[in-house]
Length: 340
Image (cartoon, rainbow, N blue to C red; front, side, top):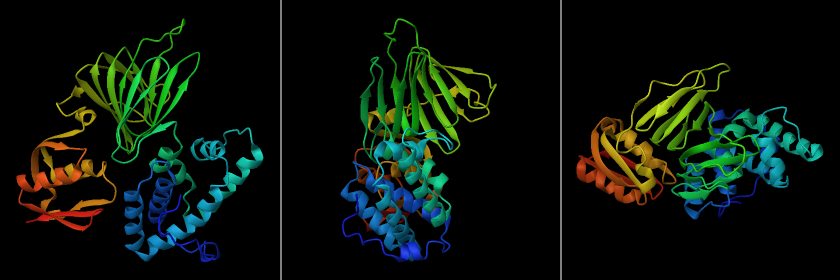
């Protein structure tokens, strides 16, 4: 999918492909490209992408180069592109010739900005290719074959891997609320949620898992889970109802009490208790396209209350009622909170 009004990729995108571009800019361009490829991309996504491209000439240059590659990647079958982008390096393929084509395009991405690995890992690509996914601001419940229910939060993605030995859900990005059901199979199969940092094994339970940078946050609402870090030989840790932990690849933090706002997002609410303004905005930004930022002079102000996630503009307006701040809308998709 191409954004409305998008310029066609120019030959300069290839002729100058070895010119230096900040890898972070290339990664962001890849995220925008993948978001617009998603079946759930909206006009708001297209407008926010256009604003990002117009903000800096380097943004537009990176966009055009990736668009040239993207046009070719669209010719690769979805299942092969999925395996190439998400599978570990060296994974086998049933279609080697087509896979080689996909890999050659990833090699071209590497020339653009050294980002083949970043493309594999970026949340937006995984949203576009996962078994189940949600767009920014969307929530959706998925019913699995055994009766387990999973509520996907905003910009989340999961893959489901059920077989004769286990029931495994891979959290690719975002956040989920899991309500497990009894396994109907004759031979018991454990239920696992896998993240980049390790696994959470359910013991007849209801719990949330959130994938963040370098850490998985796991909170148990009912029952219990056993969390186990990815590191070989790492010991598991039991987390009971009303407790939460942060799981890293080498260890899990000691269980801490959950709070009233732990699963409030499942009711489309954000509960803040003496939350910093910059942290509040970071949470609200997960539910709206575009840029949401604040000036440094108001970042450390504290606020409490309940903010609606289904209407983030109203949530921002409520913030101005609680604190001496004002909203500056550069566009609908570029908002700054500053001192009044």
